[in-house]
Amino acid sequence: MANMNQFVKQAQALQANMQKAQAEIASLEVTGESGGGMVKVLMTGRHEVKRVQIEPSIVGEDREMLEDLVAAAINDAVHRLEAASQAKLSAAMGGLSLPPGVKLPF
Image (cartoon, rainbow, N blue to C red):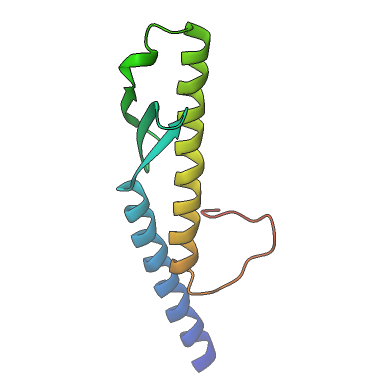
């Protein structure tokens, strides 16, 4: 019975760590860039874009190129957010390793 109590305590601690990590992720802000910094996108941990900055010198350029740069900056922000999220969740798991391909949260 002692082993079961220990397991329950560990599971509760893991759950608390995961909830804390998820709250930290929600408050994250990352900046994605493209075009060598000509386009920047500020994104929250909730995948909400807060700001888009476009270098004034490229505003009058080719519209299709500008659209591609904005999309690339958003994608860069998403990738940065995913990496930061995985790092926080891995730390919350306390070194518990999951099978390859399993992403958190479940």
